[in-house]
Length: 291
Image (cartoon, rainbow, N blue to C red; front, side, top):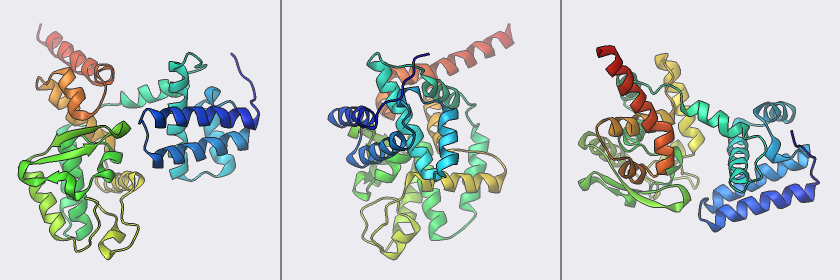
């Protein structure tokens, strides 16, 4: 095992090189780049550990020692994982522990439709502006398979409700078009009718209804919403589960892999590795049960 303790200058140089590369390729927004740069630089300054060698255990000890908040923990984990993958593509990857860990998370069972429906029903039971927003947002996520970050970046002007379509700004600022059902269009229209503010965002935080300056919804807010509803119904549903469900269903219904990659803003490699193989295995198991 190759390890070394870099100086603070070396660590910062590695972080700067990584973040600048991602910005140059338009893989990150300026906001994301700033968050990653800060989290990674602070980690190097606090520990002096080579980021390419960090394992989940090391990160967990760091988080306990420095009392890292859940939001910072999420940002730091993503930043370290991204840097390790980037280093691997450059031929300097050492462990690849986070890449393996991410693969294991994605391979968790996809929630069946009845479970997702119970999740939606739990939201629609309430008749408050917040509940209307939650129902509209989650129905949109289920239909389009959009990521949390794509949902919070969505503006009202990106929605074409008469066409059941939305213009999505995905990873790397890549643009694509997503589609949703008539029922989702009706829920979104109902939600927008409750709004009296002038904020451009399609889905705003609770303070957005009060015309405050900081109205944009945060990805972590969506995660907490899912956690609260999951506790209420006694079943765990995560934001990314809706995306995984939608992609898997479309592939099962015969959508071409390349078309799925374009529609959902993913690479063909990702579709093949994390979705298509699972569908193929399911079809193989179904066949074996019949022979």
